[in-house]
Each structure stands twice: as structure tokens, then as C-alpha cells.
Image (cartoon, rainbow, N blue to C red):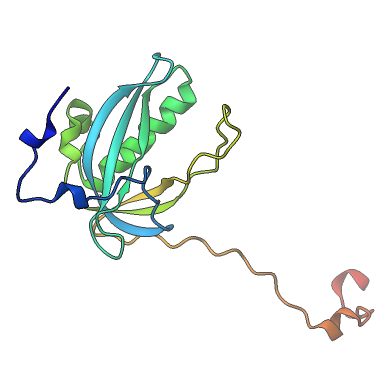
Amino acid sequence: MADLSMYLDESFDDRAVAASSGIPDPVPPGDYMLEVEKTEVTLTKDGTGALLKVTLKVVAGEHENQKIFPQFNIRNKNMQAQQIGLGELKALCAACGVDYEVARGDTDALLNIPFRATVGMEKTNINPQTGAPYPARNAIKKYVPAGQAAAPAPAAAAAPKMPVAAMNKPAPSAGLPWQK
């Protein structure tokens, strides 16, 4: 048994702190200024691979100090998963202006460097044990150096609009090259 009263700060009212509600709400999709707050390497659930877990912090705007938690497959028995993970890690390194070889040797090189990112949402996955969806989570869609704006999403090509009256008219029968 531990008596916490010996360790708590007497000038801080710990009884006024609300209980944690669990997983924090994700930030809405959009472009954000972020920085790496923490990195940690852990084993995959099956113990055959390794993940780099990263804590990103929003550093400006309405959602300042909210967190996003990407993870990168740095070793995986599925080569495609490993390639995707390392490719995303290299994109993070480039956005931070840190050479991948430096970050490969010490991920702390990524800490506290502002960069921009386009943030979206992960695809909804179902918990196989409960059948319920997992809580919504953010996903980084694109990493961008801080001095650059994230590229706007490409607009879908709009089909030319034809007036309704023109749709009901018969096509002209003469004057078209294939009709001569």
C-alpha cells in the first residue's frame, strides 16, 4: 500500500481534479501546426515486430495542446506494412527538417520541431471481441515543413452542365465532321 498524501503537492487541490474520461477526443480534420512531444519504441502485439509510437501536440490554434498519436511500423513481418511505416516516418523527418539517418539513430532529434500536417480520421475498425467500433482516432494524411502550407486537396473535375432544354433537343444532323 502507498500513502499518496506524502507525495502530493499541498498547494494543489487534487480533490478538484475530475476523473479522466479515457481516450481524448480527436481533433477535427484539417491542417495543423504540430510538434513531436514524445517517441517510444514498443513491440507489436504478437511480439514479432516493432512500432515507433509518437505523441504529436497541436501547437497553435483552437485545438492547441491536443494530442495525436501516430505509430509507425519500423519492423514487421508484413513487408508492405514495414515499407509504409518507414515511408511515413521519413515524411515526418522531412517535415521536421531532420535527416532520416539522424532520426534513425536517435528519435529524440524529432522533438519540439514545429511542422504542418493535414490531419484526417482513421477508417472505423470493429473490435472483434465486442463487435463495437473502436473510438474515433486521428490519422496524419500528409506531413509538410512548417514554412510551407499544406497543398489543397485536388478538386474533382466538374462535368460541364447542359441546360435541361438542350438535353431534350435532337442533335444537329449536319455540319459535324463525321457526318460529311
